[in-house]
Image 1 (cartoon, rainbow, N blue to C red):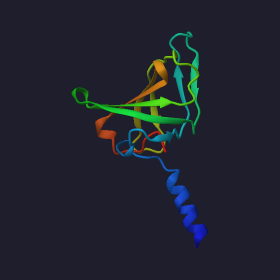
Image 2 (cartoon, rainbow, N blue to C red; image 1 turned 90 degrees about the vertical axis):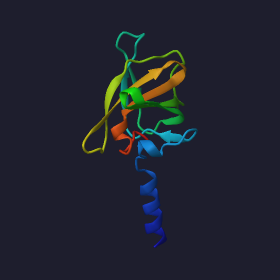
Image 3 (cartoon, one colour; image 1 turned 45 degrees about the vertical axis):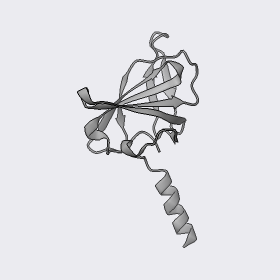
Length: 126
């Protein structure tokens, strides 16, 4: 019985958290790989592996365009001056498929843009 409860708790912990349930100052692991095109390196790709850690720094409502901006500190960032283009990312295990805009800004800040209507869906983080 204890083993069953332990497995249930473990599987619950590995599930994606909805965008609305992410909390500022908490650390999260990304649950899928991201590939973002670097600006200064003529098309080189920054690959962020699944399970890398991020800390949610702020959430900004951009009400005029019905979007929320999630800003997360990338803990394993390859360099504070690195910047990437914005890429459209399909969030895995969402139906219908939810897409977000993602880019890395200076000081290792990952910015995720998500439409307000999708805030209750699974996020990229667990």
